[in-house]
Image (cartoon, rainbow, N blue to C red):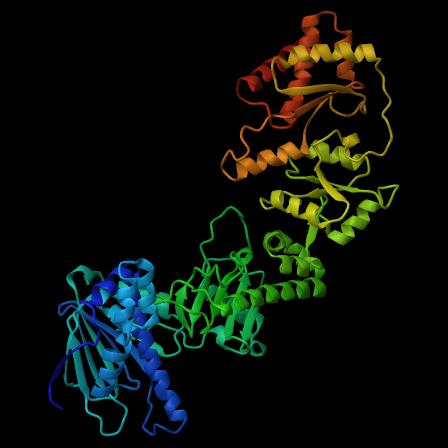
Length: 609
């Protein structure tokens, strides 16, 4: 074989600056691409052997990565197919760039174009030039009688092919590392990259004789052959510091698309905690990305695990999913599989399902709000929890509420608490009057309330402190009124003076003597609007007016003392104390007003003594 020089077939000034520009943000992927190419070469050779088209000894197929700090080289070696000089010309010089000139010209100067050209023309090998000033190939084909070949290129369109020195089947890719990329001449750095992208490659990968990967990860195995402890062990392999998962779903589809993987439902201790351990997307066991929002439904983004599909189209860096019908099909399939699994768990062991609901419920509620098809499937296993810790489906809870109504066909009002500790007085008042109270204290519940009201017929929801306990659900049973209209008017005047500019709507109503002297309530609609405004982090609806109602309990002994007090000053002081006590019960008293309340309490206590 004689030495040959030539020019890479492309009619643009230089393809390499484009490669470097559009791959630079993800420059470590050069190692993934070159190792993946080596894996492909090994797997193709194995396939030829199975078909009887290669009769030589396969040996132990493997990829080796080595580096030399002094020589400033990184070498990626495989013992796969290898190439002849003609194949180098075909696969390295021609196919990668065939027709690329027109495409480059069309998209020149656009970032999108840069990403598409690289992905479209399969230039994974040329990612080597992101870190290398010069790239050398030493290769020997598996074909009988083949001669070793050498290819070398220094980052422009000129290359050189000559006789190589490799004596065994396979290929060495030798990267002569550029000065600005010497960070990669480090064992820890290389191991980190290989562990990230090649942890589950199907061919053994070694870095300086240390094996990097597990060639048979759990998702490639038959679910029928696996036990619970196998799944938990694999989860720990993926996320070593996490608590055991609640349960998992093993995906295994080969039509109309190829999809394997395992999705885990993690224990959620703090729903405000940012998602650190995401679902990992693989293609033929090569790690691609953990940004899978197009493949996995948004409401399942808190899940963890692995998805592997060769049918998801990717660009050059394989990190951005492109629009494709398969992506939507996979998304729908995952939604269905999750719904089926949840229904199965609910049906088989409801008690265990209820115990996990605090974590599961976050996924289910989000799914019901955002995905109509999932919402329909979730009707059978979506649960409501009441303040006593009992669980109901929406159908079961509707039947329970009917028991407290005289007219079974009338509009239902479901009471709820968003903070059982802060609203305990109101919860107890409602329970004392024979009503059940739902516990809706997850962050997502402020949105879930609206979903329930939209989808449930003749049903509205009220927080227990949105109206007087006796009026949340009108039973038509008026309380005994101990005051005359004149006494009520006089009492209201005293409290208006005590309020001193507070934004309160005052009213005097007969309530039970054991209730608070003053009860603070807030309009349900206005409070929800205000919370929505705050939740979006912007003043979307303008300045929301305070609509706080203070209802004076005409039947309370303390209120009677106001009427009996000798001086107007004492009446006002007791009224102010009753108002502040009500505000304190709703956590609406703070700063100087709280200090004044404490001082006044001490003063009144001493006066009573």
